[in-house]
Image (cartoon, rainbow, N blue to C red):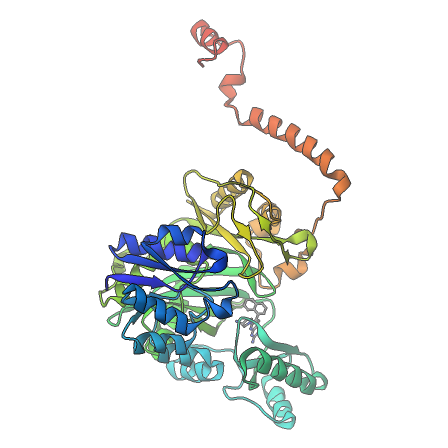
Length: 497
Ligand code: MV4
C-alpha cells in the first residue's frame, strides 16, 4: 500500500491525509466543485475533481470515486465517515477494482447494517441485546401479541435503520398499529425497505459506545465514549471515559464489544453502541463499521492514533497497540462546533467565515476542515470543527474546554458555540448526571436568543467583562503594592516586572 485515495471532505479528509503522511503514504484528495479551494485539497499530494457540489453527483458517486482512484494510481481507498463509509456495495466495488478498502470486510458491513440480522448474530455470540424480536413483524395481530410478551413501552424500529430513522415509541396496544404503519413508511422512504421489528423501550439510558480494533489476528477494545449529549440523534458533546463506568463494567462492555466484532469477522476500527441503564445493565444497539466523528477522545485517553492503526491494518500489518497500554489516562471532551443557530431552532446557517480565531494551549486539539474565507453552504453537513481537550481529570477537562471556548471566535456564520459554553457551566452536566434525554429536559440550554436591540448593550458589557477578566488573570503578586523589594517595585514601574 503506497497511495491512498480519501473518499471524503472536510475535517475527516484532513485528519486522514495527516495520518497517511505519518505512515509514509501518499494521499489523494477528491473534491466537488464547491470544495476546490478547501484545505483538504491543498494538504493532499494530489487532488481530483469528481463533480458538482451535490453529494449524489460527487462524494456519493461510487463510479466517479473508483475512476478517480484508477486515474491517480491509488492502491487503497479510505471512506472516512458518512457518505459511502457504511455501504457494503462501495467496499465491494473498491475490492472489485483491486484496491484495498480501508475498513471492514463488506460482509461485516452488511451483517451489521441489517438490524435484525445483527441481533440474531449477537444473540448467538452471547452479546446482551435489548429484549424483543429478532425478525421483522408484518401483521398487526402478531405485533400486538409480541408487544404483550415484551411488555410496554415498546419501540418499533426499522430493520434497515440506524441513527434514529424509522423509530417509534409505543406505550399501549392502542397506538401500536399506527406506529407500525408510520415506522414502516418512514423506513421505506429512508432505506427502501419497510421491514420493522419490536424491542422493549429502555427509558433514560446513557448512550455508551465501545471502540474496537481488529487486525485479523487480535480483536481488542479501547474503552468507552459517553455520547449521551445529543439532540435529535445528532451528538453534540462526547467524552472518554464515562463517569458511569467502573473498571469492571468497562471490561464487561469491552468483552461484549470484542465478541460482537468477532461474531461478524470484523477487521479494522469499529464501534459498538450500547444503551446503559442506571442499574448497570447494558444492551447492544448497533455497530458502526467506520471511523467515527468522535474518535479523537479515545485517541487522547488511550494514546493511540486510530486512523494510523486503520491504515496499518488495511496494509496487512499488525496493529501497533500493545496490550499493556490499554488503560484510559485522564479525561477527554469533544464539542462539535456546527454552523447551526441554537437561537433559530438549530437551523443550519450559511455564509463566509470572515474571521476565525482558533483556541490553542496545552491539551487542546482543533480538528477542522475550514479556514478564514471559506464559504459554508447547505450542500454538506454542518460540522465546522471539533474542539477536543485533554486534562488529568473531568473537572479540569471542563475548565480547559471552557477556556478554549472563550478563546474561539468565529465571525460570519452562526454557530452553536454559546450552547457549549452554557453546557460546560451547567451544574448537572458537571456532575455527570446525563442520559440521552438530557437535552429534551434542558431546553433552557438550547435556546437563549438575543434581541437585536440588546446587542450593543451586550457588546459594551462584554468589553467591560473582558477588561475585568484580564485584571483577574494577572498574577496577584503584580497587583500587590507595598512589597519589601525596592528593586521589584522599581522594575514594575518601568514595565519590566
Ligand atoms: C433505543 C432506545 C430505547 N430503547 N432502543 C436511537 C438511534 C439508534 N441507534 C437506536 N436508538 C435508540 N434505540 C430501545 N430499545 C433509544 C434510542 C435513542 C437513542 C440512542 C442512542 C443515542 C441517542 C438516542 C436518542 C433517542 C433514542
